[in-house]
Length: 124
Image (cartoon, rainbow, N blue to C red; front, side, top):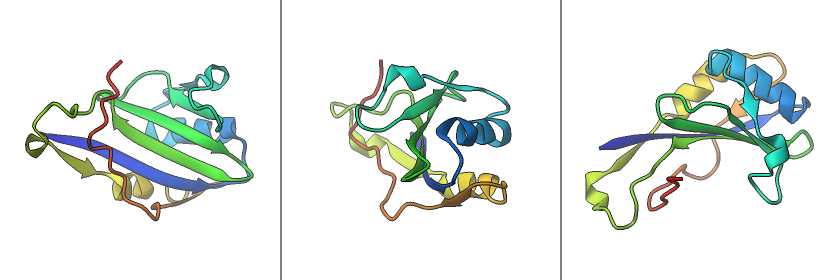
């Protein structure tokens, strides 16, 4: 089975909410980002799409001073107890970058490290 992942670095002078709004409009068909007051990450401001999209969670984290990171991953990854040879990740980062390129007010790029979530089980 293939599970889809993406990780995109975003530079912008816009606020977290403004960047989230652009991503919502251009990538998610208007699904809003929520959860800033939930502090889903201890150290970094973050928001997430209010609904999963085809089983994928979409999280935007960061701030205008340090840049942003858009993380897209399945709601549930194969757990460490499952046979890892039965699962591979399909990295769609380049496709997401293509979709977000050219949006005024943000600059997107591929991270310097691979976007690999293998071995993590985030099922809640």
